[in-house]
Length: 52
Image (cartoon, rainbow, N blue to C red; front, side, top):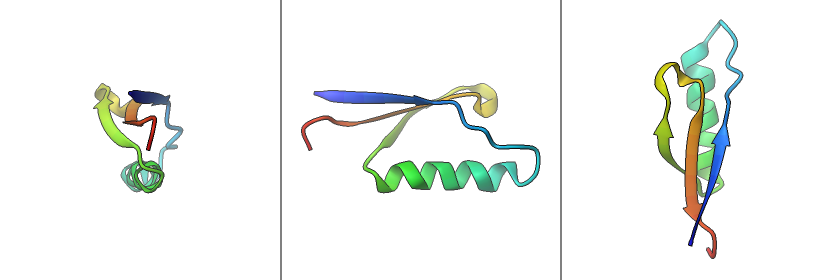
């Protein structure tokens, strides 16, 4: 079974790409995998196995 998490990143105006990369790496370390990124990075959907 999978579980999902929707994140609305607050990236600011400066270093937007770096902040987005840090966010993705943070969730990756917790076992989350990117499932979908909306246009304009307004939200990111992550998934992982629930029984890991």
